[in-house]
Image (cartoon, rainbow, N blue to C red; front, top):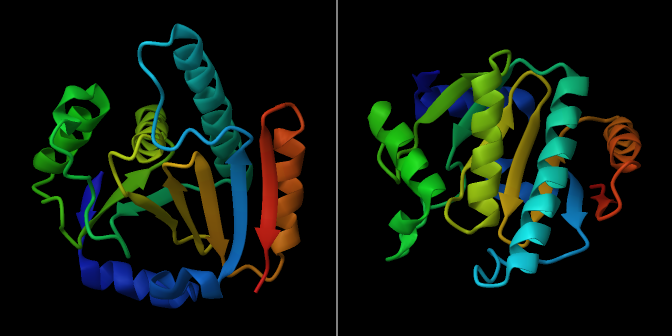
Length: 197
């Protein structure tokens, strides 16, 4: 991993044609769960905990398979249009995933509101694992980290409503839809929607 300056990120975004400050102007694909977890689950209800993690595993598998089928090598992590990399909840430290992301930022000398990014090579298995942890942290409303894939002009964000948003400049957005529908065919609790601009 390496730190990337905000000016380099801006150049890559400009070259891709993605309108990061006006995401609604891009072609948009939504992967969503039929369950709206809204940031988490009741930790005292074992059935809910099991269901959450089963559903999380499905969503993460879909995203991983999507990225692998596209043959993407590099990803830029950052806060992009968000205010912070991580949320500032008073009890956030109790979550191990939050502490892991704090450690990551400190390791690369990035603050929670840094405009710089991290370039991640997806050929390395531990980096794919990192992307999964980031999506989980976003689902749990602990972070607001976005993922930009400059090779193909795609930006991915995930929300605390258990949604993954894919924004692309591709003229062939239907190719992405077909690929995702093919992947999710084996999962019962996930759907794909699209909004084309």
